[in-house]
Length: 187
Image (cartoon, rainbow, N blue to C red; front, side):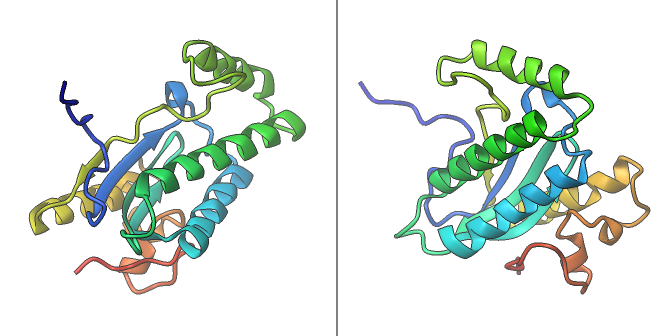
């Protein structure tokens, strides 16, 4: 029996992918500075130590958009990097919620606990939704569309008037300013 590839999977090791992953139930977790910083630090760690290339990114309150590729596709697996990024950020944010001064502590932990109870792969909590909604970018038109979509997200939410004013996005880099994450620019 031949297995059908899963939709939105990272099949081409040399591909450039638009990836979105979301907090369970689209919970607005990234409204706290400490959680945003933790995600940025983790993304930077994966760039420096795991062979992740980030071409564009934007952290929203309940999800993240990335355009990524593997620095050395023959040596690293992009799916493994994303798995590790999600696993680490989930454990660190949950630990911060448990031990910090999060005002929504019980409510958030209850939601994460319930999500885990619905998924046999989890034991106590589930922070991220399982899928990564990965789409390989195969044309310049598709690349431009996704790049614009990522950078316009905070503008559409009304957080900033121009994309480059949102700190948690690569729009800053694409406008000539230094952002929080090293970017491999798309041609």
